[in-house]
Image (cartoon, rainbow, N blue to C red; front, top):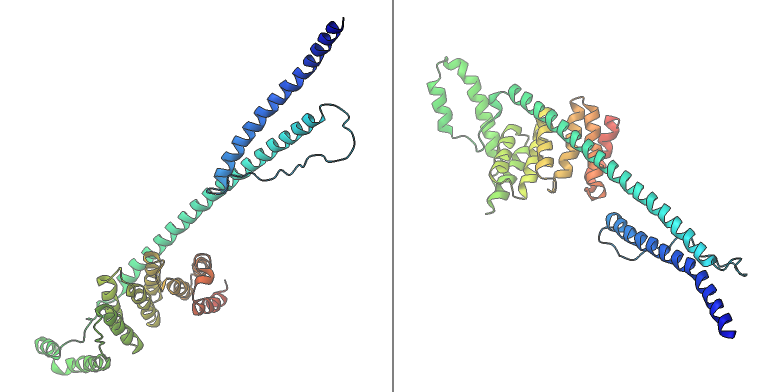
Length: 312
């Protein structure tokens, strides 16, 4: 009789434990699935980050007192798993929205770049067509014999040719006053000579010299300085269209060059002089976005004044 009673009690206990065991197994599967999904989300949101999990926002119930039911821990675990699934869905949705917004920003930036390239290309073509051939002099001072030969072979009367010859001689005298550097560093000497011509306000000669530096040594560190100074020479000579093109080419071709922030700032100044205030403000905003505090202090100071003048 005792064995019969014991066997019956064991059977009843086993039957009662089977639903709880089945319920625990289902929850374990859900937890394992959540862990896999959370790892996948973490790899996407935090690439290269720590594989550990964050602590759940829903903490276990630590309220003192007896549980009202025997399976209360299972109920708490189910609620926490439901909350985790909801949080995972929210995080996945936010990740997809961020990815979509990033793609849209990239498209907008690419369109803006294409528009700026087209505008500057059109401005360069128009400026080249409007530039007289006389504004492209030789890099080095011309030899006196060539001037004499040109005067001899001229078909005009001597009285008419006397005035241009005098003007050329005066220009030649100014160019000869500029000392040609000879430090032994060919690239630096070429740039320094262009700088001295610009400093002497001999802008056409300085432009020709600086163009030679950029064309002959485009990968050197002096190329960024030369291209930026070329834009300054155009700007000082009253040719903002050519200046804007020169500044833009320096920023586009050498974004990490020493004078790239300067060129971007002066490009805004040149565009403002052309009456294109909206494009000038775009250049100033790009200066802040690309370089920010990394830009030299003088550039940031000049840019602030230029933005105020343009009304940005």
